[in-house]
Image (tube, rainbow, N blue to C red; front, side):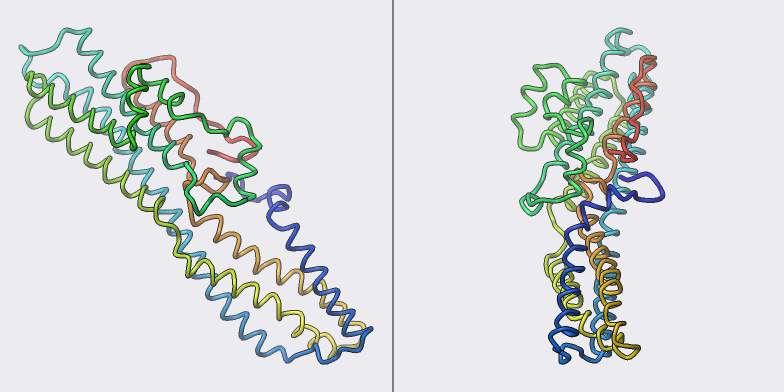
Amino acid sequence: MYTTKRVPFHIVFPFTWRAVLLFLGYSTIICLLYSLAGWTFLAIPFVPVATIGTAVAFYVGFKNNSSYDRLWEARRIWGSITNASRSWGIMVLDYIPSAQPNDLLEKAELKTTREKLIYRHLAYITALRVQLRQKPVWELHHNPAHDIIERIEAFRQCSLDKELSRFLSDTEVEALIKHPNPATYLLRQQSADLRRLREDNQLSEYYHVDLERMLVEFYNQQGACERIKSFPFPRQYAYFSFVFTWLFIAVLPYGLLTEMAKVSGWHIWLTVPFFTVIAWIFNTMEIVGDTSENPFENSINDIPMTAICRNIEIDLRDMLGETELPKRVQAIDNILM
């Protein structure tokens, strides 16, 4: 997630420099053919070109709105995961032990049980984050948004076993990574521990149901993330938005020639800068939609899941009474991951 109000040139440049050079060269060749070669037939009425531009603007706007909806929904999901994680923390601390004082665990064992449930939850959100950032088939092409992140060493994602080793023992990690969906399996382990606590009368029936309900909430939020991750933005909308944008860019200079020639002969050269600016605007709108449609792909426009997971970790470990807490994730080059 980019955090500053304005995006600097060195971020914009990788997305636009090839297109800008193409626009300059394309419009210059057309103006040369018109003025030097005498190909005046290249000038066409501007009305049909403007009509195409209006239609393309509406279509690209629809695509960008839809892409933003996917991005905002992903952020709302992780906001819900944050709230549910804090609720899970206070429930674990207050519900275990149960309301029956004669059946309490020994103090040391009680502390270990609480820490186990909370640290396993931190492992769960970590596993979910790592799983969501794995690139699907349709994102394996070159993308400047990914390249910017990969050049920053602090943003390079570690393997799942290394990430989980901060919260789980080596034995647990080794067994966990064998499963196709480690995040789902971690919730299953949480449920199994709650059942054992209930069978040992260390957890009342009401509290057991309440904690299980929280696990169901995590499953729901995980499923919502996986829905966005596994279902790409519909290709029929994304592809034809690209086609229509470049079709408009291709015919635009011929319409501008007509309008510039009405002023004077040398004004036709104003076609080059005006076309370049207009084409750059439409191309940028198309790129903005493309780079926003998949919010879990480890690029500069993604949901800052690492920062969110760290905030959850700080809150839950603070609930446990720990004093040596990790620092909050800070933006690097104004990018927060």
